[in-house]
Length: 410
Image (cartoon, rainbow, N blue to C red; front, side):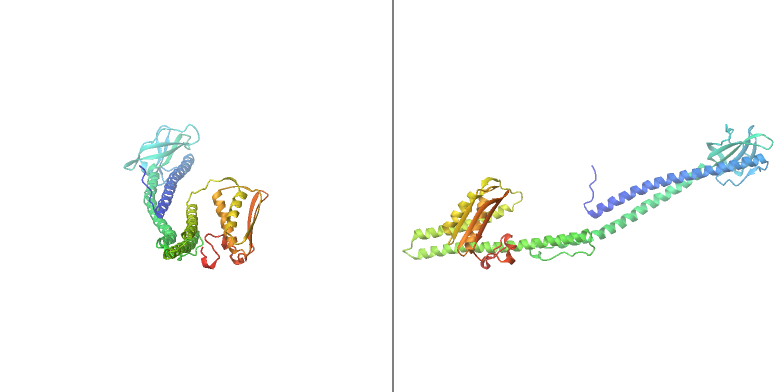
């Protein structure tokens, strides 16, 4: 089963970055070792071919000494005639027989890997170049020159050993640096989280600190402060709404209780009138409770009300008739056919609220018109009252807003 990743962003980021860098360093190390090994081999081949050509030239000129020098401590050189006589050799092959009897078939040198060749008291493997040559007397010979393979292998081994120590050390240092850098970058985020975690419902007026970096963390802090401001405003509106809704519910309850107490104290009370008054106050409370339930349900996520095609003029006509029965001012209506898609109860509630507000603030008359303007249905409710003050016209569209100072809640 795959091991789970750390849950900390800091740990995951450091682990991922360290893994990527480690993979890159390992790949670079492999490429480096291969390149160095190839470079050492190529360099040794170039030197061996050049030295073989030089020895062949000296053999032809008759100036070749019996002991060949200047080829390096880790190389060998030998000049052998076709009949096997050794004409010259490097110090590590002094007194030794011919290392090989292989002769190039043409003027170009050939290369062979020769193993277990004598090297003083030991044996080594060599990469030997063989070049055909001719003595001053015209005798055919072969010049053998080659570097030791062990030298290149030791250089590669030393490089690998250094990388085996250096790469893990570099990865460890890099991981520690990344851990500190990521921690430093995430410190403001942790500060914001810790600050928000301490805020309760009574601390929504407080704000988190915004770093002056102008980066994503600063924008996160600004967004968090904006959210706290919205929550504070929403909580204030809810508190005011609950207070005023409680006041509105208390008023009919108080009136109902007072009327019943007066009736009970009066032996000649008109109980049918008392009952009608109690029913009126009950209707008022029922309307308030229904409105509260509607608001609560409309705020539930995923709540959708099914709609259908209906005539808005019919809905408005019923509400106008209801308003005329109770309004102290004249209510006139001009209603044209206006089909809309919606919910009948919600549209009725909308029209009723508009008419209630208009009749409450009208001086003598309220007018209602319904018609169409192209594809748009227009409902207009007007009155001859003072109207909404210009400075409050934006606020009336907010939830729970009343401009009446006696019952202003939002």
